[in-house]
Amino acid sequence: MLLLVVITDHDGDVTANLDTALLRTFVAVCDHAGMTAAGHALHLTQGAVSQQVGRLESALGTTLFVRSRRGVRLTPAGERLIGRAREMLALHDELWADMTGRGVAGRVTLGVPDDLVAVLAPVVKGFVEDHPRVELSLVCASSSDLSAEVGRGVVDVAVVEELHESAVGEVVALERLVWVGDRDGRAHLARPLPVSVVSQSCAFRPVVLDALRRDGRDWRTVFENGSLAATLATVRMGLAVTALLESTAPVDLAVLGRSAVLPELPPFALTLRVGATASPPAVELADRLRAGLARRGE
Image 1 (cartoon, helix red, strand yellow):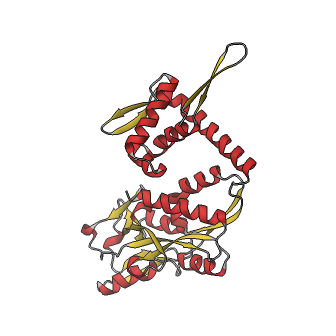
Image 2 (cartoon, one colour; image 1 turned 30 degrees about the vertical axis):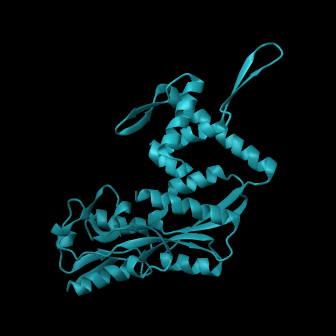
């Protein structure tokens, strides 16, 4: 592979052309915060990634990363390069897609439960940036509604939450379902237990209520109206407890452990649903979501 081409024009000036493959590897190391993770994303060995970064550093005559046992971080030169490298690669990919007709284009509708929107935001943002010719629409609804919408062809791709032991979709990640309450509140000690859930169609509702019944706990519903924001507000006010996937619990609220004397909740699976006649944009988006959720569990 030719990594650095030196061209001398008629006036004797020298022009150096950077290999975009080296820039792509450099950006991947930045995005994945390490050589090994970047190698997984690029389907290269860690040694190959390190070698390509070294070649780029040699071509530019500067060090781009500071390496340590804790990983890598950008040098001042690396900081200068990263923004321009992203711009150059984006322009390269857009031009290539436009001239060859190979770019993904069209429309795709993504379905996501409210509590997973922030979790999936980086993956969706990257997809939109990499595929400017795709028109993406986002639908937020309960997992059961999204599964039905995929079946009807209204939603092309959906990430839904299902009880792990009975999941029927493609399982791409596992999450703990946990009790969440106000950090200084005592709602978890109340009898009957005040419980706030998003709506009757919430995937967690039957599981939570079944756990309370099996534990012999009396409970009462404080709030049920379909709004995640309002549900969390009741918890922040100390009026109730709720159940969330551990990774989605807001930092200002407390995950209630065994000391709260609440029944243990079963794990949930994040599953991927793709329509039967998936378009190229839908297939590409599903691949991105699959990879992004898998990396979160590493």
